[in-house]
Image (cartoon, rainbow over all chains, first blue to last red; front, side, top):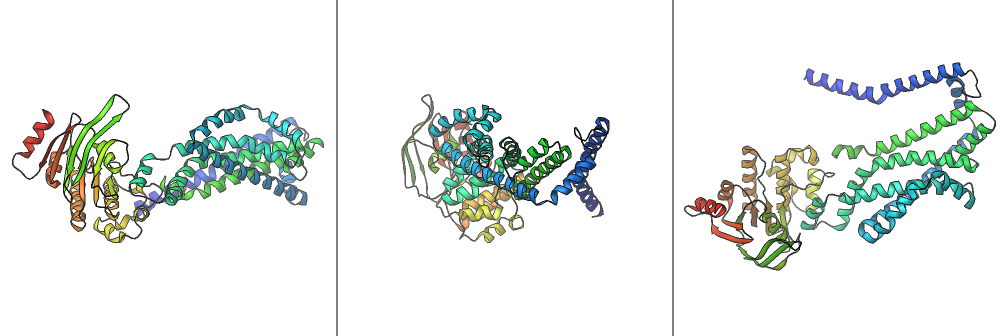
Length: 261
Length: 212
């Protein structure tokens, strides 16, 4: 009993170390390198110290402009992600059901994947407004990634299980919701979670180039113009934290899947 | 009688599995199918279950069929109880779980089960489905002797409660003679033997037919 509980404690300790301690050590190392590099450079216009950046970071959090920009960027990220996800799901299902659809979409997806992101950004900046362009740009980049992932997951649904459902006359509704969707989600959630953070990064990049008002990208562009390097680093830090948080939330939502996988 | 008349099954143009195969299965009896690996035993079960295309006719077969697959085919994201409820939500699942000594693991996912447990879940799934015909593809394969004995006993107990026309594929003569009423041997795309199991020298007859 005592031996067993000891083993359990060890396992828990290892889990805690992996989840908390190691990332903290890594972050401290990065900050130390950054600190010594900024001392060596000795110019806050090129590389500000972590302390200056953290000061600006907290200062930024207390301003209304930041929260307005933050909420708009996040909203745009979610809008583009949800639309991309829905569109990718519909297209993947159509391709799965009708092979002709997959034959038509396959070269299109390859072209979209091969198109340089910067070209997409520039074209949409010309064709649309600075508020809409970032949404369309990130949609166009993550759509092929999500489509490919969902389509291959649909093709990998266990055929043996589907045969079993056919023999036992399982209702179509149950096959979709209790067999297909959980299996597809289990094999796509990793690409969904990385697409979401990629979406945020693309959004900020597009906002910088589009000079979108009320956006994190817009704030970055402003900081760059006025040489506020510590401010720029602070916004970057915030973007990294949001991206990590989004990935963490998706992983949290997938806890039930890990129980049966 | 379930009658399979002139069944022909081909994979492509060259690979002929059966050619004008005729077999009769007695209703409410247990029939074992034996034959060399690759002779089409599983294909025959798939034909009866409607899982593969073929030419020919099957007569007197009920629409509802239960199938114990050789790889269990439990849905990985559903617990044992949910797997069974999906097949027949109105069945007395607790009774079956208790009979199969699975009530302690009803909330387990398939990956948490031992192979013997998964076999038993697969077997009771076949019995909770309201069918008159039961197909089993090598149901006692890869099991240790104790687990195999347990599963055979469970099968006979469930069958006693609810009789079904059972057709099962096996490579093991002893298993066949223990539970089957009739034995069918498939060889060279034809049915070579269709006899009662309870008769003298049947084992010799089976071995002779299989090895000749």
